[in-house]
Picture: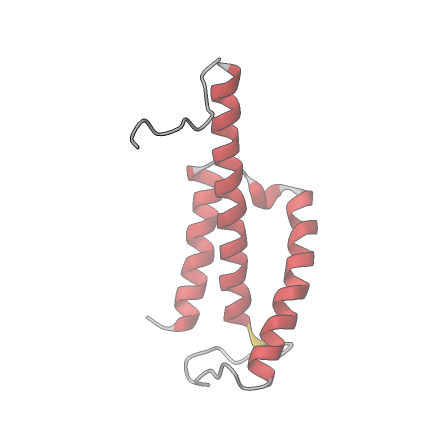
Length: 115
């Protein structure tokens, strides 16, 4: 499978996880897109440095070709998938912890009884 196909597959898989599995609907929130815009600036900056100074070199036949600030579009897709998966997972874990806390279950980490 090509780098481009994997990038698209990663985005589709993460959208399914966000919207259908974890049901956090992260990508439907304005606050997500505001935060993502900030992340994207730094992603483009770092990708620009790494690819602009040839620290990372891509085979032209392995990518679609279009670049933004030296970064192949596929890198932006992978970055998007990474950010969405991380934030959706974090939101889902926090939601479960808050639900347990409301039900009176102890969610604090306990010290191990082994020495």
